[in-house]
Length: 209
Image (tube, rainbow, N blue to C red; front, top):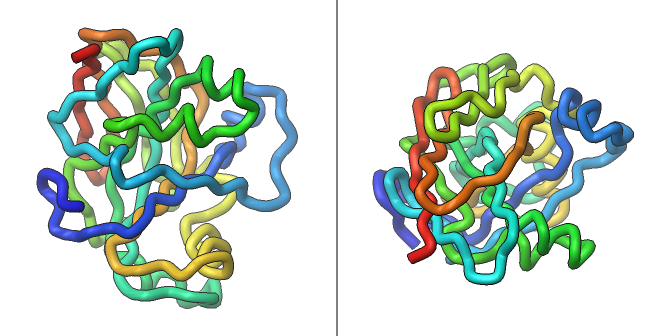
């Protein structure tokens, strides 16, 4: 799959749930001892400026701003100290979620897997220190999420190492690192923007068409 502004072709999209300390505090949940990972299908991927389709029958559709990384070369069982060598660069991701279905199902696949539920962009930044970047979501120009990557429970390098011990990573594969507090609903006609310091802004419109 090739999307706007991207030349790489991922084989999979791996995401991490509950990976910000301030988000865990917001939800009154314990800090996880290991990363909780899940997958989105490639059919969820869209680029900057593309439209997020609000599915029929969904009662609540949420934004989730996330820092994502793109894998540079094949990785399997790599040590933590080598992790950065396997990262091509970083970008913005919106883990769009049908929250009512997530709560109903008790697991996340359906709620996070509708077509267009993974906006990505606006580009891949290859030279970036991601240890303390500001990450924000704006909905119709109103600030909704505002945190920094210093709040990550499991670091970028740790996630790459952990996931590579579970599954082989290939060039172009995407790993997303979780969302900070402040997730909330969107509706058709809304403009949602994920902004990460040093990368830029990923902007998409929500539509029911």
